[in-house]
Length: 481
Image (tube, rainbow, N blue to C red; front, side):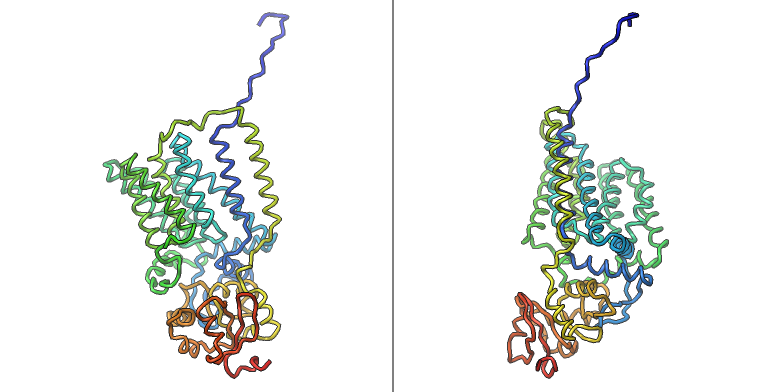
């Protein structure tokens, strides 16, 4: 630089965002929309109710909710999630749980998009990520399952050598204590490792990951208030598969609903990509194994949707010609608009009701409480999901339920009685005699609802709401009121 001459530099042009950044923002907006939906899941209701019990007096070891199986041994597998829900609810209310769900959903969209980065091209990444998020729209709900999906992403990043596998020790400890799907992590690592072996490569990475995953799982099953029971719980579920014969999520998907059809599209895309573009077993085997598991039981769909991502990403690498990594100044306004949209979606979403109870007989339950038909000594027969609602709304000290969706806990006789009542060709009279209900709260658009309406069966309808009836048995004092 010459003395006395002031140096001047031309301002450097500011680079704009890339197409990859724009897509990430779009997916974040979608994830936020998914996560801020009002709470509605019946299983979540019991998880939150149980969390309240845990905060008040510790983890229950026996069923506190039912009159059909009082005191039956109960392993609260998701005690950690229940405690988290209850703590948030106690601190800020249900809106805090909705924020937690939203954070998880946004995180999943970003992690999925980041996991596809090795495909490089925009077309390849979109073909992998978009179906996963589409499936998530129906499955990413407020159950503890959602927490397990975030933890599964840690396993997948480790499998791609993008996360130190030692982080899987705390991740698996948490997973064991929030949801019973933790064995899927070990299965996923094993399948990817087997694929590498079939490709005649040393599965050094997978062996390391399996070791850390197994260690975290073992510690999670030993260092907790319930002890080793958490480790054997998934095996106990498999031993009672007959108890889940009528539970939809344990049955093979029928692909009649949009959620299952979206997964079928994802699965077909995955098969097409790995067969046509990457015939390596490390890509083929995860799609085959977890595709088959999802076809066996619809409850496996949501995990399979994520576990297939690394395999399909490898097959989609280089698909198309658009490099989404290139910064483009022209995309700056788009980036700003998407950030503003993200904020607006968040603000609007937070203004919505915290819970959607439109599918539950809220008014009928309130009427029954007013007329002394729904109390701690009453034996009210109702749908399983209504039992979950009762547990959250009233608690075990005010209302006892006949049945809820904790099928793993109930004796087989109770499950059979419930199925006999609700099915069209079951032994309804025999089941009702065994249950001896003091009242029935049932939906009208059902075989049992039609049966209750028939005066020849002796039951008296004492209250009606849109879609629901309250009926009492012959000889009931309420029938004369």
